[in-house]
Length: 130
Ligand code: FES
Image (tube, rainbow, N blue to C red; front, side, top):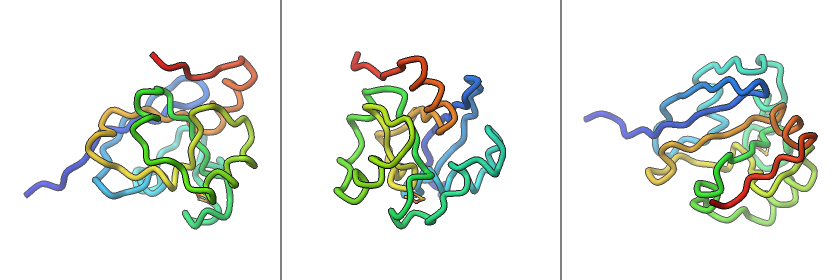
């Protein structure tokens, strides 16, 4: 039997989109590592994932690009919110990539990685509900 996966798209600061398949139960940080994403180079903060998912950094900050998907995520824990507060260019739909775990209803989710976050912040980008 084939492992169940969902489609996840990572969006670089230049708007370059890379679509990958992520197995149910895997975090977005792990998935990015596993797929060797090169969107902003491997030394980019996001790909460092400095604390390896133990909620002790904010390097895995991502923006969920569609409010529809943001609303499908489990609410962030207090620990995640504390770390997000430290993230550069926080937006209404920011989350930590190590805390977003693939579930069937997230199929099609699009995530902007932190360099994009910065640009969007500068441009006044805020994801709006549809
Ligand atoms: Fe450190 Fe996600 S990798 S909080």
